Image 1 (cartoon, rainbow, N blue to C red):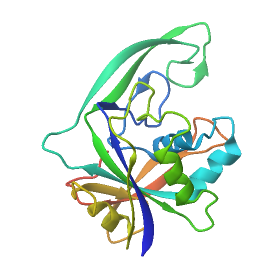
Image 2: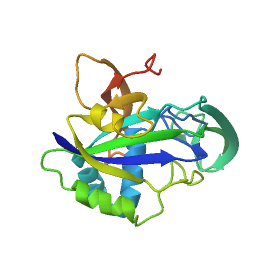
Image 3: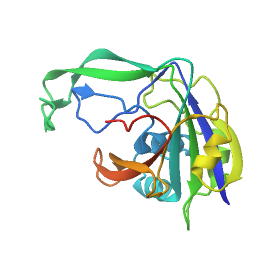
Image 4: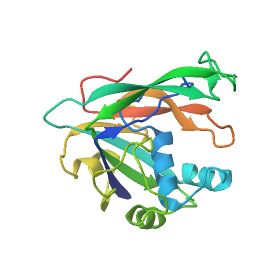
Length: 218
């Protein structure tokens, strides 16, 4: 049996940015690893200019996300901005005196349940995470600062055989689960959302194992 910390991400809008440049800013269909680490880092009071502490957090925890099944489908919307001092032509070249157009995507009325667990030798224990989630240092938000939470993050602390069992013990008890726990009997796919702390805006890939649901997202 293993110990899990369960948090809930509920909000009218959420944005879990995929790997991209300034112009097109799509949202993934469920919270990314980089997004969850950013939220937890805010709760712990870790600043962006503290790479050692950010790396400790990244190395300390495993993550599984359940897209909570509800009576309606989550939809996406986009909004439009113009931005200065951004990457021009969406290819990474800096053009500080030019203004570019940008479209940002959001999820509407999504609900997610997330299981967190400690890796061996974790510098940041579940006790530390639970305390920070219950009383955040910085205000947490759902991917972007314009995306507030509609309920407290903390849901439960429990023991289970694996992340699948842990999440299925939490209401609504159903939904597709995307877990980092290795299970070669399950469907898997790769996502590029592991932040390289010492290389800003750069990401590595990881495998996710899928429990339930009809398809693997593109």
